[in-house]
Image (cartoon, rainbow, N blue to C red; front, side, top):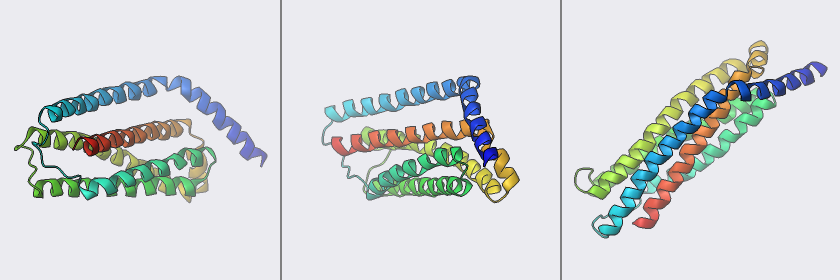
Length: 209
């Protein structure tokens, strides 16, 4: 028990040390997300301006897959929050469950996005037929790329978690590694960002059409 407490104290000190040593990485992510936010919000702003000047020129009904995918995205963001606590508390099973659940939900979100595009296309909304449609496809497509990038990294984290959860020695090394905590912390920030951005996009389309 004393060894466990000692290691937990070491982890806490390690996290504080990492917050200083890894500050450039967090800064890089911060400015990357700022850049993505500016890009998304600029496109949304241009879309809203176009819509206000061309009200009624686009026949758009919110695809049901977009509605379901919004709920799934919120659940995935919630499930991912357990990964940080599980890592801090040295709970490999919960950690793996959190990552794998988020991965499955993220994949489901991506699949539903594709189905949403298909419904838009089938209803006569083509990317080359109307500027408003082009905005919708481009903005949601850009968000989709952010999700795919996140899914690749989440798959990598899930593989590492699976490799360590049933091996006591590997698990000890993994959960004592302060750099792993930083990776998970940064990914949490990234995933919550794309979650929040999708909510903004969803309600923008919902209330302007």
